[in-house]
Length: 419
Image 1 (cartoon, one colour):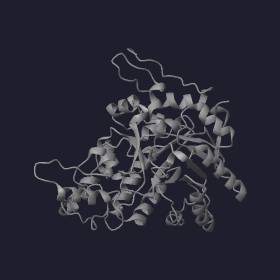
Image 2 (cartoon, one colour):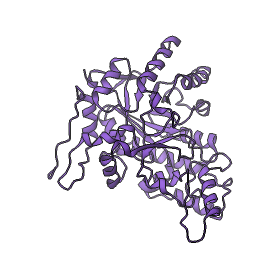
Image 3 (cartoon, one colour):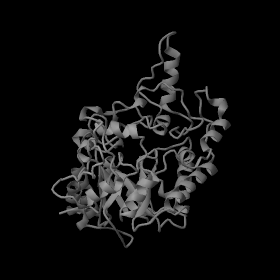
């Protein structure tokens, strides 16, 4: 049995049941999402730090304009007045989504991963603009992530595409899903798909830092499936987190999954946004290099490589230019940690900021090497080159391997010269 024996049906349309997860900041690039779409699957882009991403792609000036506007607060720990211009947020979102959607050539779809926890010092207004701008720009689907999203649907319920665009949510428990569904039922707008993310996923986790290993994806998937059956709801379930081979995926599809979401193996493809040297770090990683910590200012635990430069940051907060993770009121635990360390630093000693990191800057600079638990297995998926480095596969190589492989085999890409 293989993935290609199955299809995901959404809105009466069939897709190859492979979804590439939304890895930010711009790791899930336009090119990576389009690779899945071209092959009949679904690719995600992420709207994390959309202004910064636009500046890199289109040479716009969203970040510099914001930094200039709030320059007086650069040395001030009070960031309460550092706010995003909603018109700028809307313009960046539309530009990025339209750029991606306009290049579709296949029978697949492009979804946007939209994180509720990207609070931007004005959580509801900024989230509302991001969602609505993406819908205006023609996005095929919205995946609601990083939070319970209790009122997210309210922000778009009067949009003309409210019942047209596909809407899904990422959850890690029946409880989280049931809370979301109560509001969805009141609005008569159930999700079109549900992504069940297990404890082996990369980045922020919906589990505790000490007890994540007591949970497993299959158990959660089974519990959610039983809950939906009990409630009489027929909504495609999409497991995610640790699905490393096509056979892993096919086994879930045989058990009734609508599709699978995968990301780790695509993070090191040619189309992914990580710099070439960072992709080599991922490919060379061993299992002991993968750690879970509480360095994120969101309060959620994160899985990343222990070599991540961001774990050694002692940089001044860059909220004036970025500030995507400022809580309402301009609060951020990294700001507190930075100024505490600055006050306690003795002359001649280096500045050391403990416990928290500047996630906005770290993600923007590709210094925060978030990863799935199976990252240490990436070396099984490609060829070692003569110089000791690893061959970088294409997204098509990985997608087709998921789609057609059997017996937990992994088809390596065709060797390059010198491999």
